[in-house]
Length: 409
Ligand SMILES: Cc1ncc(COP(=O)(O)O)c(C=O)c1O
Image (cartoon, rainbow, N blue to C red; front, side, top):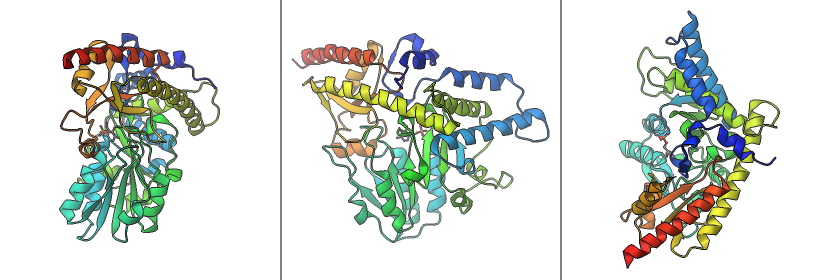
């Protein structure tokens, strides 16, 4: 179906303010259904979880509904869905838990393409255990993460291979199934950072080969919460995270700390329902409608990315980093003669919202030698963006670049 952009945009109240949002990678605007669900939950009598009274049962139901929604989004079992405040916090929980069982000589493999949230927790857990860290390198020109290197990086002592499902800096979508195959051949756990990839197309844990995948709802129209999802809940049952004595020992609750934000969890379920409604003609269960809606959104985003890249290629003052064959609609660039921060500020003054710096893709920018001089500017496209917004960004960049040239003279 043709993606109905007017209908899609109408579902985001904040777009009425008129800013041009090219920073979905830093967090999307919130869908109306999410706002309503959170508001309704806060207006309703809620109690701490208990089957004994109605408000307590509502909280139990909100947790269950969020788990089942995230499971539908990823093709998972709700029993494997750990809910938490952020992808970073959840990854630290798992890394510390697994790391407690590592010995000197054990190994973990991380990549320099990843957001630091899928690097440092593993590096620090390895350091604490005396385990060895092995680094997967990206190609500096294309931004690809070559799969061939994993045959050398992975061995009998590899415990975890942590890799991104999509780079939040330059959009690269690595061949995770092929990497997972190498890791699984030695029994290593494959941990996929799906924070940037999941908003931009249908995700299926099994075909990805992910044993555990983490995703953050605020990158797909929802509230600031995250989920860490195990393909096989038995994997979680075999682990003993640090926890309070009286808190639930069942899986997945065992990995969750404190009292959850029940109202925001209602928003997580509503965000998944929103994604499942992106294609109004889609039929079938929620998983089928998610696939249809996200496939339609993906095609819309890909067309906008092509338009943006074509426009940037015509502008010699602009350097775009990387040209991966498979990518999320996310790019990093610099304008000649201007710091990324100055470019971001000039665009911001004109109502365009973009990130600048390293956006925590620390290793990528270090390796590229760009970090100390300010990183880059990031344009990331989400399904509510339009061709007109892309054109306006290109026009604005011309004005910004002309200002940069004047300053350089
Ligand atoms: C690829 C990627 N991974 C991890 C994170 C961290 O997510 P959270 O803010 O939920 O900890 C981000 C946030 O920008 C990200 O883009």
